Length: 372
Length: 234
Ligand SMILES: Nc1ncnc2c1ncn2[C@@H]1O[C@H](COP(=O)(O)OP(=O)(O)OP(=O)(O)O)[C@@H](O)[C@H]1O
Ligand SMILES: [Mg+2]
Image (tube, rainbow over all chains, first blue to last red):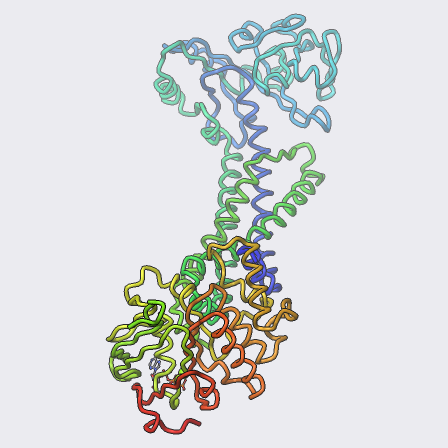
């Protein structure tokens, strides 16, 4: 008999109780997975906007609910561009639309053709759009490939028809899966004259980025600068909120799971006091008793977690199909979410079983054997 | 003192005292006793005279208030690992079998063998041999609630032998058995003593059971006494 078989056997002996605990854990883990996938998917969409161009940092309006609602005056773009240490500042108006079921978040970037090179854009076929054209568009090469379009073709976005005049590459996955047209064109279409969504800033070699960022935020308190993904919350409150909720849910799940484990294991250790006394009397070490209880908890929590991950999958797929969310939410299953679920399951077992396991291990064998 | 093979006696107890409750209860009042290798000794005496207490001290489940206990020549108060001692030096058999109810007969033997240095397959092999030795091969897959009293006690003996201890300590092993079952258990003790050379210390109330041993030691009020001084046991 292997030690694991013994622990599995002990868990199996208390079928009903183990299953109930397992169900509590499965539900917690299912929620963790669902929230994790949801957060990750939304974050990915949001991050994609920041990752369209080649910049040292970006500037957007501070504290808007979603980065797409950020509104920065074009004059501020010029102001930032005039700062010492700034090589160039490019204002981009971002429009996100649903192309079709497969492309729920298609990005259209309004950007002056003169800024394209500085933005890191290379024309791989065709030509740039005209500075004030409202019908010419360039597709990123991934988008072009994906949509099966090439120069001379037309694409329909939001009931408007555009002529594909060029194919570009930025070297950024998200940028290459988007499209670009003249800033004026997008501003007119969106009825946002003189406004951009984001400013992409590139500094000169060796310039102090922090200094430049501080200066921008001092001169224009309504703006926020973002360098890394973790700073993204400053310009996207929704994402910040959902990320916080995600962490909160994980913490709650850990607590709920740990308490369930604690409850069953305390009971189970108490009932088996005599058994543990006998095992100690025939030579089991304290460590082995500790391990025995811990592993029983682990068997329950990992089994529960496995069911929970499955249930989480199902929940995500149902969410993605719900009429309210079709298009808004496209599930993406990152390994990290499952890693976290696994870590939480381990955490539940460890935190929940520590006290009962220690109690069992510290029993005096004689007292335990006398226990009725 | 040693036997013919130059080995020290199995058990040497020197003036051992044991009190409980801060000296209010004196369970052992100076016990001195030597048991030779391969000897089968029965310990008899009235209830409360300290038999179990002495056995627990020998099993290293408790320590004496004063006095010394040597097992195979080694003082057990200075053992590097109590767990190893309990596992490899002595085998315990209780009055109530104290088997694990959810494990099969063979698993109840194997449970004593974790990390004993044997390969997994060797552990299974030895457990099967032990079940054969206590005539329980046909009950290998049965759990204790499905065994008779005598079978359970034989299984407990098999478990006590799991790691080849040189000494078996048994506390009232036949106390809960009818006389026919008790007889088979006593036969088993006799056989393992004869075949394996195991030293046996068996605690009992029952003089008939005691008569099966090589030597009978009488206890009273925490002391070893002459047979004439021992009260007739119930
Ligand atoms: N843990 C303890 N705490 C207090 N007193 C104890 C403890 N263990 C034993 N005693 C006392 O020590 C004395 C000897 O007990 P012990 O169990 O050794 O007797 P025994 O000879 O085995 O009796 P029995 O035949 O009834 O099993 C008794 O008076 C008992 O009440
Ligand atoms: Mg007793």
